[in-house]
Length: 196
Image 1 (cartoon, rainbow, N blue to C red):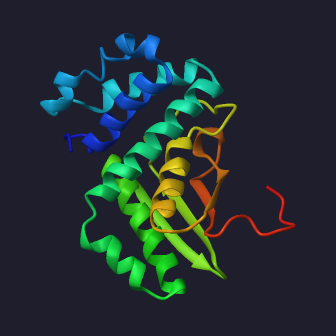
Image 2 (cartoon, helix red, strand yellow):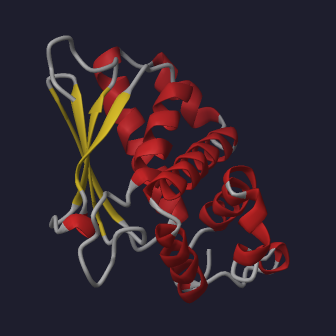
């Protein structure tokens, strides 16, 4: 974790994701996300902000692909380090598994960016995850599309690794003028008849 609260997990997953999704652009982004800087813990808020700004300029498709891959990678790496905790979740009754899994998703997101405040709730089998202070969505002006794809992908993959078949949707995004970034989580897919 840097002094700005940026976790190595987030920076490493972004670096790997750019390499996979935009391989011809990796040299450009390595100016801010250099492997040497990652090893020495030199990543900070300013370099990360530059990377996110330039990625948004690549367009919604490229940004979404990079953020989705980075979120999935973060979830897999975080899960691999989870140890006994993930086994405990598997032994819980289904209603408690949902709550524990969503709280684990909140920990995963905070492992990427410590100043992030995440609130979770589960009601009638559906989860809500609200984020305040997301590094992805703190923009000066409103943005035409949601910028919290990293969070949605990380939560989705985290829940998949715990045995759920989730449908995670971005309901509100601070970058689009919302007060918070809010994800709705259907743990076992979107119910029939409910619109996306």
